[in-house]
Length: 569
Image 1: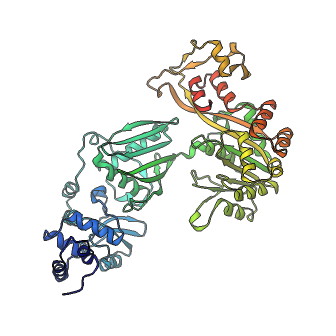
Image 2: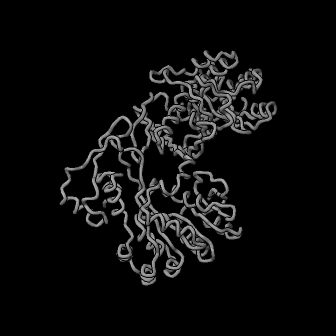
Image 3: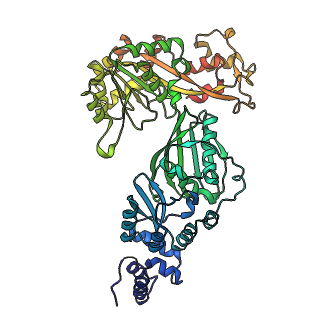
């Protein structure tokens, strides 16, 4: 009896196949020049799913559901059909110089090597259930797209048929082979375009046990936009992973990728894509990165006149540190990029260390962090200082090492811009002190701190006057201290109409801009806490976040309810 190898040995050890039957099957498969797994399935010795699951465990390769990929996107005329039939291996997709090949045995190196030799492209095995692969290969060989679509469970779900193909040009190599009429392709493209049109910041694709939903984050609030059938979950995930050049066969660990979509001849939108394995499939979130948002100009961001002048004055300084703080999604990146755009001239050398690089800025040297190879914020900063910089931007100060190098740069003739995750400007200073940065260095290097939030902007078409709020309540909320007489402002309630979302349309920034005055610097040197620094900032005339939000409400830009949502403790 011939010695058992690979999958045959594992099937016997797992007790799903008798040893003598496994040996006979292995010998017969070799004689017929068939993959062992395929022989077992064709002769009804084991079902395809069981064989595939055991093979996946044995070889450490997940089983790929071939139904997840659009049949019309399979590479055409790349591999000789005779070679496909010979090795029972189907090319599934191409990523640059890698060709993913569907096989029933990932250890069949002969098949992969022969396909690589004939195509000149590096091959990578993707494990597929034998019966599904056979059907797909037969349809592919027959070059009958309708047959192939039926074999892979063509999409005929109500709600997808009516989508119109769009002319979006997704900037990825594989798109040359996509067909506009494929329902999954049309559905994903429509979701992306709809998100862009309504100004969403994020798209969530979320699988659950009995439902699947797509949600947009618009003006900071998530809302459900679509509920496709749960049967499409795997195919939707695969399509998004194909577009963002991820490994479609890997569903056990999170992945990151990017999509670039042209929406016109002069405008392209980037999507930052992240996958997360959940209990019922992969949740995928797309962050929409619109380069035009970084070029709005400082006047469009919502700074009060005095706050804007303080920011511009700090940007004009040859050295020092400007810190922007706030939670995720508060607009810190746009504030920083706006400042960088103002500084971006031919005479200045600007370098940024970001994780990730969200928006590409022409004329600025942007560096993507990569901790796997040791490229951290601190390491990038050290390198910047050896490259004759004028201005340095650090995506985030996360540790003492990064803080110390950034402060050293600010003290040696460089302008440094960065972010921290704190709730207010005074807390930013105490956070640096708590990290271990000497008080003297903080007091002498930090020149300006901007804490910010984003509040939803009232729709001017449907807002209604808030005459029902008593003066007593207004005083309790803090309107007596905002610097605007009660008779000079009018508050509004959101209503909702056909051009807005529940009475709001767009967002406006709410800012606390604090310049480090001699009094505040003295407090820092004396070890003052955030409450003492906040009191000194208020005495110097710097509005805190709460006051700024109430001023926005008094100016009719947002509502009291929204001001409370983003700033009230």
